[in-house]
Image (cartoon, rainbow, N blue to C red; front, side, top):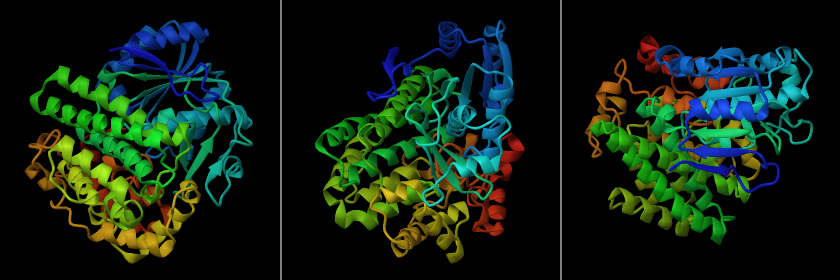
Length: 474
């Protein structure tokens, strides 16, 4: 059912709305007309622009506007893409930016509209870095000005970053830096299931697991209060059910069930981030480490934190067992099994992180992540223990080539979506659509963690080769 809501009940969100079951072809022109905006910048998915008619259809609807277009944004919103968007805003007097793509697109656009209001025209990388507290990787809210350019986000993934007034970009050293302003969220979020249905299933599910990570980490945090716990108990089953419905719709080629599953997932992804944004409840070590890696870390984190979060983990376990029909006895095992059944990498070796040197570098970068100062973050030895568990945990399958043996049947698109012998979940899915992942494919671990080592990058490129040859989803 179509529903228009205020994004969140927070100061600074007045006039910042969202529409579920939206129609991008109807709702974008209507918003631009309401705002009196006619100078428009489209920032759109390469695949949507070149492999479908969706962007061309929108351009036709906006033929009366002065249009600029940027096709493609790199994994994890590289500074070069952020600057390109911001410079276009400044030099072309852009009144509204429209982002259609994954979390990398929405984050790049959110930062760009902040910086176009904050920094002088033609600013460079050094100007961006000068805004950042390098200890915690955070710029703002002081020193960042409120955006003056409207922003519409039409997400194609479940990373849910569009709901946040934070956004992350990756500098030339591969470090994710975070930018924030209370008015930094999009002016309008359009949850259009038909746009989202174009996302390859393995990428959609990769971002869905990240949203599950949001729920799980929040519930396990000792600051999670009764109201937030009730919210999570209601929202997490909806998200898991949505992922199941999506899978079933894909498997049966049932468009109605597929779109219903997408809509459920979109609502669930918002609910997953709400405790962090609205109640300021931090997530946990998995999320801080995950800004350098991915939610591969969550099962290992659950094992590591079990003594401190046993009661919360029992709630999580009961939800997974109830919705998925599992009979697991540990939340970590249920989460690991869930990841496996979706055909996702579940060990670090599957994303070519194998050496002690790599683990130490990831640990060092995790401890300087902006979230590390707010979560119950272990010291470096503890982070290394989590990483070691993630390196050796039993994945139950050997990776993408075997995921079709899972009890969920053909596992979300099956072998037909396996490209070059490697699923996108083992490749770009962990990177482009999971906020903060290392980019284990197209922009591999080496791109997200520049100095981790060329061996990581070379290995990940091999994993991604089949995807790149076929036309990588961007």
